[in-house]
Each structure stands twice: as C-alpha cells, then as structure tokens.
Length: 46
Image (cartoon, rainbow, N blue to C red; front, side, top):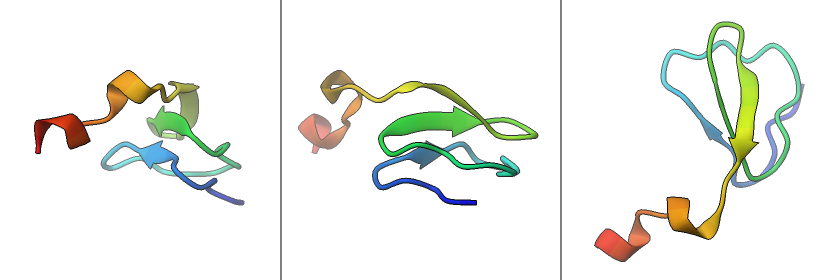
C-alpha cells in the first residue's frame, strides 16, 4: 500500500489500501474522501 505525496490521513485511521497524492482520507478502514484544494491550506494563518 502507498500513501501519496501531500495526502492527509485523519487521526486513528487504519490505512488498508493506496491513498492517492493530494487527497484527504480518514476512517476505519481509511478511505479517500476528497481531493485537497488550495483553500484547505492553513499556512495562511501563520
């Protein structure tokens, strides 16, 4: 199994299959929820 670059995995998630790069994923078992977009970045708050 592979977790792609920039993917965000939710806390306590159990990854059982590949997660694409740049996607939000969470759950037990972990599943891809949606692609991340620039508005998801919290770097603007720093």
